[in-house]
Picture 1 (cartoon, helix red, strand yellow):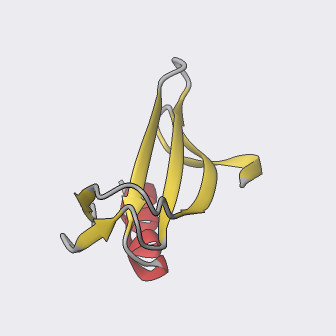
Picture 2 (tube, one colour):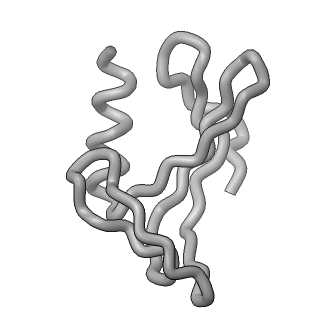
Length: 78
């Protein structure tokens, strides 16, 4: 889901999308950027799209809404 107004993280970074991801044919396993737990691509997880004002884009995968909330708190406190 694209946010109507991007959420400022500080500096030149903004959250522009938040979505729920699941790819049943993808066996990728990532580390959650907050808790260090595992994020399995073939299971439901949160995906955040980050936009840099220079035009760069990143995707961050979170294992739960609690980890996403904590990550947003950390990023906006910096």
